[in-house]
Image (cartoon, rainbow, N blue to C red):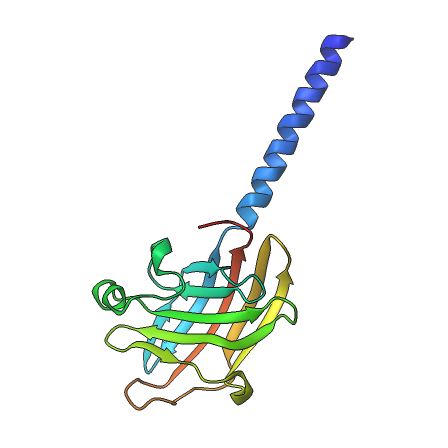
Length: 168
């Protein structure tokens, strides 16, 4: 009888470990969607978060993998050499809204271009989940934006998940 109980406990522990692993996989950083830049469609695949300011995490969505040292301020040299395109924005943890603290579009040959102020209404953020461990949502432009003469008109519609609470 004791052997049966020990086996049952082991099986339950193993099941709990598998369940935990499945949850951890579900919370992986990911992004899907495209950035339309003129006639070019750029698929963004990588998601990162900087939580240096706990009340306003900064989310980075990129088409290229980035080193931790480049989050959230991507160096222009890295942008140009690796042909990095990225959308970066800050989120109010309390209100689950975009903030004016940080909002950039990074493009090769252009460095960082500001996305404008939240009050302009050019971008819309919808947060599906935001807790201590994960932020999941969608960020999209409300129209095609042509705010800087040196870059083509752009729009994007991106769904993302970033794991929170981890140190770099």
